[in-house]
Length: 305
Image 1 (cartoon, rainbow, N blue to C red):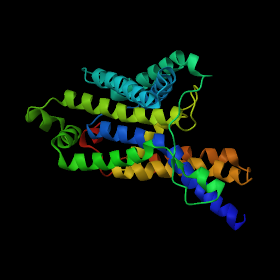
Image 2 (tube, one colour):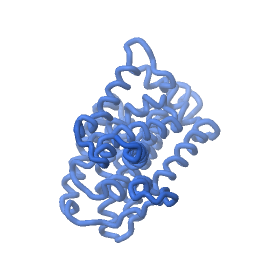
Image 3 (tube, rainbow, N blue to C red):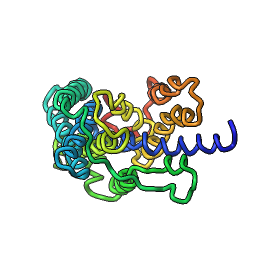
């Protein structure tokens, strides 16, 4: 490759990391909040798909892209709240409930979203971070989703809140020791339902990114398992909101390698490069989940299961 092609590929990967990584960022932050409280939500794939459909439908029927974003957040919060309420019942398993909610969310999205496959909805206006360049390729690569800066600020806010606020302390306490939380007079179920709902609402922003920015339309295969990958992202990030930003950009960049190479005319191995995020997920799970060893930073209640 020539020097210009190398530069174009690098900027393509950076731009792709910001575009492809946006849903990963919000879903991983949502799962981080949920797991910090001692609950696992494998239903985030269903949350992501349902919120993507709801965001697109809200924007299409209201004519306002921000109404669509709010609709996606509301749908994510409602489905996650259902997960939290069901899991608070006696003898209910988080994993089994999460799988059931994943199927429910995707099924509802596919059924309710049938009329939305062809129409076009208003889209989020990109932030032009490539204004300084005269290269069309660089300018196109640096058209940034306006929700991405919000996600970074949200990660910083969550990191600060977990360390410095009463609500953050309660979430961490419920995740580390349910017995200690009850001994202090707090409702473990109430905290976990609230945290799970908040996590679903944050993940709903990831769904809005899919249908209101990139790829910017509604289809039944829009998620490609990103909600499930988020669980691995949280493990990789060691349950830290700030590390979730890095993990999301890493996975987004991995998914952008193929398109970046194709943009300069290199199409060999395109489909192989598309599987890089999934291979990376498997590698992270194998490295992080060794028998007899707890992952660093894991909430105590999750470690005891």
